[in-house]
Length: 333
Image (cartoon, rainbow, N blue to C red; front, side):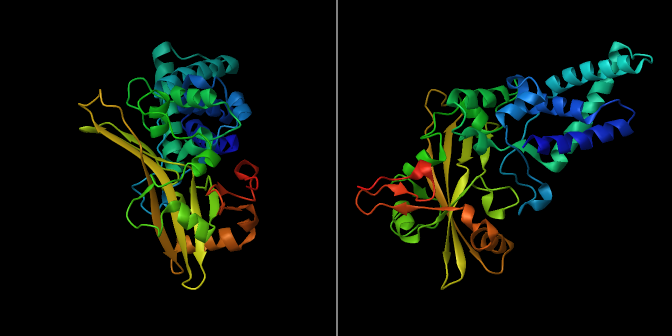
């Protein structure tokens, strides 16, 4: 995953070198790592060890180019401090004249600007759900990483960061398997209702579970939603759960896409009122004329099909399970 960050860092370093700044790709990666992860990860090597899930959400690939499922806020102060130290070492190593303090700071800011532009253009960010619901890391460590992404002088830029700093209540669960098991009558439709509700539809449709879909998959937008807005009269949070459920109607030749997500809101003047999550699912249908349909057809009927688990419901106890995943296994009743 870190190689994705290094692509952006390399592009930023090359732009900085064209501006006569002695910035190497490895050093640019260290600066970007500080800008995205804050003080929670001291060095790029630590990000590699933790397997931080960097991803590119390229604006050209979105259905609505003005919208992003997630946004990445950069800690430009930390980036500038690190860039200044890196450039100073580079000038000293070169053996030539070393710029004065003010000049060095301006050059550091210029290097940061090159990296910032590449980050925005390429859509570099941390895949929030992949980190938040990663059962291989202790929950405290996951939340600690998101907490370090909070830039002190700004509101949280995402629901995951707002959660980590205490602006949102605890989630119903912190793994994909436990989230799926939480499906019950309290999950409500956003617009179109599934016959019999979410669990009944899973029992009938036996859908595929598409977990942590890439941004290039158009159907993934709601699953990757991670938004927090406190700029108006209210605070609003939307958090996708990192997956969607997919079934195919062979007779009518279309896909049903069901995406569960959480939403919370309150008026800013009602700070004493605790926020609570409303649990929703969004139903979409993709027909054969759409690009999304072709992507989903490749996912389910192409080479990628064997990677997808199918969900079922136990006829005796109503438990949602999968024969294809150990964490969703269900012993016989």
